[in-house]
Length: 498
Image 1 (spheres, rainbow, N blue to C red):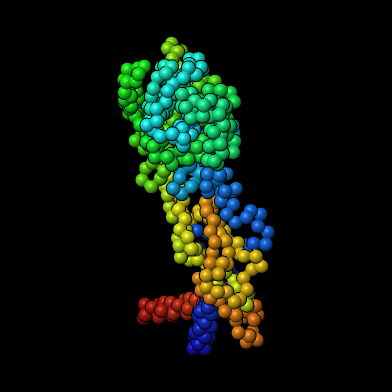
Image 2: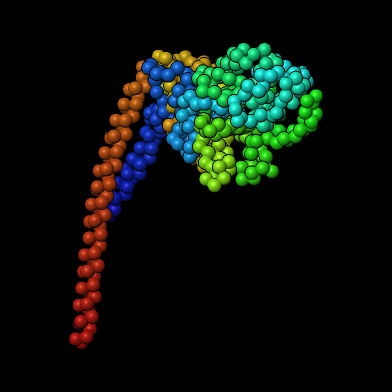
């Protein structure tokens, strides 16, 4: 028994040595996939740059949601609104496309055209310039909204801009166009030039008020137009004005009027009012549908929302009274999508450690870091573990020596199917050439693997032997206890016989 106990102790010692050796071998592994998720709760993938399909800086546009040209919004492009023919939701601080639907389909802008009419006017006039109304103002589309301007009436540009944008008055658009360019046709040319300068590629205006069949725009282009227009602080202020009092003119008494943008006017239709909407322009033309373009903000998020060609439904008993406005209803849904479901997060920090990269012939791996801060809109309940960092090594791979601050890779950050951002990756420190000691890293890894395999085999044998010894000891103990029990019983029987 003493020999058996000695054998057991020896086998236990061997097993303990094997268990210590295996983790030691594991820590020496240089498999690059083992370094994932070390510095950031995002999964990372390292790949070669030998066949980059999309140039750096374009993947987040062509395959992502970055900048207004982003083709893959965070919220996707499926239909989320009841009837809009086109829709666009863009966060301007982070330049993130959150949602779009048919963003590049050409649709009639209707009275949203007046936003460009106002922008071109302010490029060429001062607010206090006096406009003398000509008879052309009466050649407006029949039955359309107008301010009741009269021939030879004298008004300021400021007065006419408020008529134009708060009431959507078509005679005000004509009066401004004649004043600026001498004719409506010349003014339309200026409008199209302005649209192109704002980055529009699928927009063409055929009139100064938009009530024609030739004017076309897209939800993406209309977003660009509203962003460019609100760079002018005067125009931005007018778009957010609720109420305007116009003094008497040489032809009319003093007048006052309210905005027809119900999302900024609590006193008209309270259901549509939202204090996060800061301004905008609206349109309804029976043949084109109801459209709306607004700016809205809350906390650190500033959105531009556009809906085009929504369906407006009227009361069958009161033909002028809408049951469903379309544009206001669907912009309300878009606003809820924006503020109830999304937030801004910093997804890349300047100086942030990103990953380790193998350097051929180097004494160690290169540690990569970002040199920029990047913020993005993310879903409000987003699990940051669903962010994927995809790295592309510079052409030809990394070879020692590598200097601190050297560009070693590029990266993409993805959320689901959308590339949220791209950034360059720089070496955090120097990587020197490894000394030639006759033992390559490759051979060391093979030796380590072989040693680990031998130790693992020894451990397996030890476990089997220990199991057999334990079984033998258990059986031996059981038999000895049975023998002792029989002896005690025989002694007891003898005592009773005496």
